[in-house]
Amino acid sequence: MYIAVAQNNPIVGGLAANADAMLSVVDQLADSAYPPDLVVFPAYALSGLPLDGLSYSTAFGAECLDVARKFIRAARLPCLFGTVVPQSFGWHIDMAEAEAIYCQAGMGGALGFAADSETGFDEGVSSLKVKINDARVAVFLDCLPDFGTEYQDCDLLIAMLAKEYSGTEGMLSSSGLLSDLRMVATEAQAWVVVANLVGGQDDVVFDGGSLVIGPDGSIAEAAPAFDIGIIKQNLAIPIRAKAGSQAIETRAGLAAAIAADRSPVKPLLPYEADWEALKLATSDYVQKNGFTEVVIGLSGGIDSALTATLAVDALGAENVHGLIMPSGYSSPSSIQDAYELAGNLGISTLTMPINGPTAAIEAESIQAIGESGSQTARQNLQARLRMVYLMHLSNTFDWMVINTSNKSERAMGYSTLYGDTAGAFAPFGNVYKTDIYGLAQWRNQAGAVIPSSVIDRPPSAELSAGQLDTDDLPPYEVLDRILRLHIEDRMGLDQICDIIANTPGGDPVDRELCWNILEQVKRSEYKRQQEPLSPSLGGTDITSGRAWPITNGFVDHYRGINDALDTTDLMGMLRDWERPEGWGWLDN
Figure 1 (tube, rainbow, N blue to C red):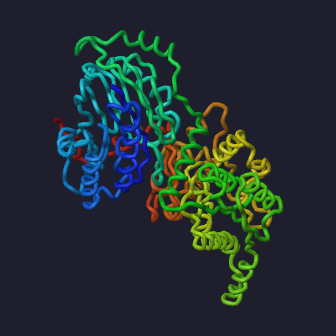
Figure 2 (figure 1 turned 30 degrees about the vertical axis):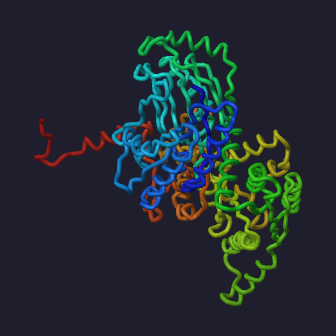
């Protein structure tokens, strides 16, 4: 069987456009010298994912069915593709029913597998065994085949995935996942084909990396990560003398296959993978929402420099514009660094100082209330005026405003509401400040576009004379360690202090400092819930993933638990409470 895997990048809800793009791939393959016997698309290839509120739209459900049938009629080659039947129809579709629904039109030989958009297949059904030509095929929707003997009667295992990027360890190129899939192939003595979705959708990135693994565990073909692609492989089927024969010595056979394998899989290093994920997320968010060009406020600081660099990598220098907005507090070195960065990247810049508007508003304030405003008000005024300029250019030229915030500052609310919290998209909003520096240093290895002075200069918002971030925040190395334990690991004051105090070679954290940080994170919730969305890289999304109530009276405090990871002491205290006379446990 000659098979093609089409790793596609759909637009959520863009059913007709997605179908046309898929049919274009099918037509290209059908017109080739050797057309494949089967074309496999990923899960949700037709509908896109995640669907969120679309899941409950009856109109969207009807369109899913209508476009799926049209695709089946038009497909010139046998295809497998994934789509959905939303919950609003009140249907729970299992694999057998999906086959009946989508094959009734079957003129093109295509088979669409449907899943309930929220819960997947009804009652846990996630795979189906079918016969395609002379091959016995097990098809999995949005899950991978597992170990065991259940599929040893199959020649081919096809996994149609929509797997989100969550760091290098979750990619199909990771050593752990590859080892598992190779073992599945050798145990089942079957070909394993994995078709994974690719693309950015709001705060989600699908990482692709589709692959074909032989019955001996060797990797035959692999598609690129974070990009569309087509891979082809001629599968030797049947691979057994008879159905149900025993598998080969899997571990010995796998070891031999790996030893002889010149794998086409190219694993990515963590910063490289994160950068590629953020590039894809940014380009897809901009372009899928109908924009071509973006504008970024360039301050001469590390955050705006890295954001502009990413935007150029994602969209091209010709589509990125820098706006330099100096104030009376902007240092000459920062302004110079902003111009140098723009020159290194090859992007156009505009300069619009904010001194005049700032002075005008302060003068109006003096006339109205007798003073120019508090220190906080005067600092925040500058950030808000800069956003006014950015939005003015956005409305004038149809440029999307890209936000330059990072996860550490968002967590602490170290930002100005309706100022530097605004914008359409925040590529680094889920990246801690220490990783901002790491990514900048990594990116400069491919070409030193970010001036070294930007990386070396102590971070500052430059909203007042001599201001530094450390005036209001602890050093980012200290801050990020506490924030990671609190946000990613869901730890409170007791646990954080205990973990840090018992880390070999580490210094115990000041309990009051830790408490102040957690309180600041809690008090800043109202800001975060108004900030632009950011792609998630596998951690806790700082806005939707962590969202606490905005009106929130909870105050954490130190409880003195020796082992903060073990709450059995507290449970014991609850069990040992002094019961009133006549109270007790009943025997069953």
